[in-house]
Each structure stands twice: as structure tokens, then as C-alpha cells.
Image 1 (cartoon, rainbow, N blue to C red):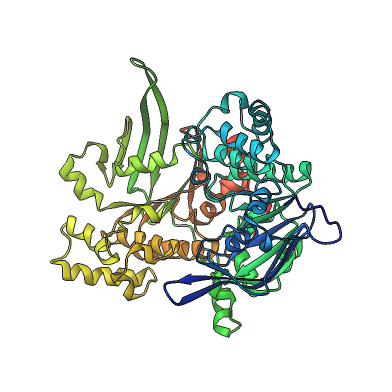
Image 2 (cartoon, one colour):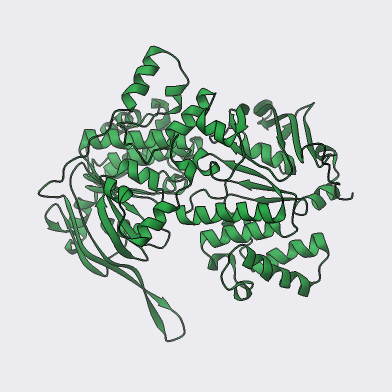
Length: 572
């Protein structure tokens, strides 16, 4: 089938009364998208926004007909692209349309790029398949595409493999593949999730520039209204498979009509205020006097905890080097952290910010002694933490815990939640027996906002936000005095993120814990931290209280980080 001819009298993409269900088991059918209609005009960027499970990605994958085999598209559903009925296309016609007329950028480039092929061959494949280019022509065009998406030294990078590139560069390669055939529509599905704020801004600027140069339309999918505020001309807000609101971006941010839209905007931490609690979705979905009282209480400013004369944690001149093998007999020293010094008082939070590779996580791992420091000193509660032997270290380990970034990878899939929580108590000999430990685990599960029935379930039965609550509960089993949060909310929906941040603040107040809060999300760090440490290429470039850092940054790198925050990040 030939490529659809441009139709200037109707939208480029016209989704009408789309309904998508999934067959689960033998008889159960779950409805994911419920009678929605969306139109995308020529050279227009439309953003689909909503929480996980809202139907955003299902809608986008319906356009490409890339839904799994158990998906059912309801009668009366219509998807027209350039006037052509997509749902009626043959397999060959679909193959011609994908990549050539509609490009797609997925969320995780590492799982989308083939690890055994060079990036050059993966880009060239699309050019050879859809445009009939020879190998020589396609590789010459590949170099041009890599240069266009901002990959340094494109001629050399053509022969690189995906694992040799950073996350931001991998995403740029995905964009190069998507635009290789100059498609009329680009679908970008969460293309900036979990990227550093500077890399995120670069990707957003790149997409906006490509759209203008190639005069293509874009369907941009995100769970964060702050991100889409700087790129979309129109925003469609989805929840539970339905459209809650559709309108121009300026109006959506300035005068949201739907309570759910107002909630999504309010859940995002502001750079201007630090309320006692962040509002969550439920606070905006009710007009009752009780809900109004909750919203009013959340506007009260949170007080900053004073610095103690005797901090619980003092870090001096911490350094970490890695020795890499570069040849048969040659080695190269890589400085991951060059000189980090800071202190932390009980009940206070130190925010650690910087781009990937800045040394943030390495500092956190050294504080746990999961990575041994090359040099420096860590004094924990008056004792040299780095000099502890194995037995003493075991005793101290229960006093300092870590919540990792990925709750999907940090929980044992073969253990029930009860086993996950009981294990650390058993290892450290806490409480008299497993019955007492399980009773304590039940208390903690309820404390982090999960039902009692969760104790008998496995990790795969929970959402990402619920798994992160389980990870926090696991840390609390040992009653730690210092908790390290390593990008622990970076991949969560803004509403779930608000719930977890509120939980962390409640726990800090209740147990007087000190936090080391590591994140690339500057708005979240501003909300959580009393003091902020900025890192760049392993070096601490600035340390000051949170308000000072954001009001009057001194280091050029800090200024660049703050300048990269998308406009939509600041709540209206």
C-alpha cells in the first residue's frame, strides 16, 4: 500500500471513540481506554499526561498497532492517519507506515536498542528498509543524523555499541532512528523520564528543534505536567482510561478546569514554597469541608530543623578512585569522587544533586561501605566508620540504611513482603522470635500506608510506588538513624511521588532520622532538603542551605543546573 497522501482539510492524526481492553485469564476483560477522541494537527505538539495506568501508552501504541496479542480494540473505534484508516491496514502497509511516516521514541533506550549491533547499523537499517538507500548512502546519512541530534564525533560514534554511550546519548540515538525517514508524526513515550535535568532539557530542546526543522507533528507522552509545559501546544489529561481535560497548554496551567488536572499540577513541588505537606490526588477530588481543611493545612510552611553542635555524621575529604584496565599491562585511574566534605545533624536532610557521573551515588555507597573509600574519613556518631572491623560494621549497618532507586530490582521476587521485612530483623538478631518480627512487620506495613494483606503478597503484585513503600518499610525494621535515599522517587508518578515524600517527612519527624537525599530532580530536592551539596565530575562545587542555593547560586555549574529546570516545573 502506498504512503498516505497529505490531507490538509483534516487532522494529521484523528483518534475517535477509541476503546481498548485486555483479556486477562480465561474470561476476565479489563478496559484500559474508554471511548476517547484525540486529534493532532499538522506541525502540532499534543501532550498526553496522566499517571501510570491512565491509558497514555496504550493509546499511543494503538496508533502503531503495537498492542500485545491479548488486546481488544472495541467496535466503533477509529484511528485515521493522513486520512487513512490505520485499523484496516494490512501487515505490509503497517510495516511501511511505521518508521517512515510515524516514528517513535520509547522510554528506555537501553531496552529498545539492540546491544549486539552498532548504533550506526541500527540507524542505517531504517534508511535501507524504508528509503531504499545503499549501505554507503545510509551510513553517510547516519553520520548526518547523529550530528543533527547532538552526538559528539558522529563519524567515530557510528561504530559504537549502545553500552558505550550515556543514557542521554542513547536517547539521542533513539531519536535519530525515529526521525531518519523524516516522519510526519513523532510519538515520544516518556522520552525524558529519569534523565538528569540538564540532559532532559537538552532532549526537550532537541525535540522542539527537530519538530520545527522537519515540520512534523508530535504526540508527547508524560506523567509530569512540568515537562510538557515547555514543549506542548496542547495538553490532554487522562485518568483511568478517560480524558479529563483537553486544552491549550497556557490555559491548562493557568486555569485548569478539572480537579484532577489541578491535583497533578499541585502535587509537583514548587521552587517558591516549602509546605508542610505536598497535596495528593485525593485532596483535590473532593469538595467536602474536610478536604478543604486538608488543602489549607498543606499550605503552611515547613520549619527548617536547626543544626546540632554534635552532628551524627561528619565526612571529611572523601575520595574514591577506580582502576580501569586499558591494555594488557596498562591501567588508568578514574576519579569518581575527588574531595567530598559535609556534616549531617539528626532530623535534618542533606540534598545531593548533580548530573549522572557527578559522584552522587558513589558518595552514598561509601557512606554505607557498600563501596570502600580510597581516602578520607567518615565519623558516624563519634566513631571512625571506615576503621570498623566486620563485627562492629555489622552493628553499625543497622543504624544507617539505604533506599535504592529501582524498587523493581531491590526487592527479592521470591520472597513475600513479610519475608522481606522479617529477614533483616533476623539477620541482626532483633526481637525474640519470628512471630514477634512478623508482628512488627505488620505494624510497619500499615505505617507506610499499605493494607495488612500486603504482608502475604509478592513484590510483582504491587505498583512502583507501593514497592518503594515496602523498601522504606524494610529499612525501618532496623530503626536506622541515617537513611540514604538514592533517587528513590525519580521514576514515580508525581502523585505517588508526593505520597512517598510526605511519608519520608512523617517518618523523619517521628523517628528523628537524618536523610541523605540524592536526586537529579532539583524541585524535589528543594522541597526535601535543609542543606544542599552540588557535585560535578566527582567534585563538590557548592554547599549551602537550600534557600540560598536556589536564590543565589554562586558556582556557574549550579546556575546551569537551575537554568535547566523546565518552565512547567514551577507550579502556577
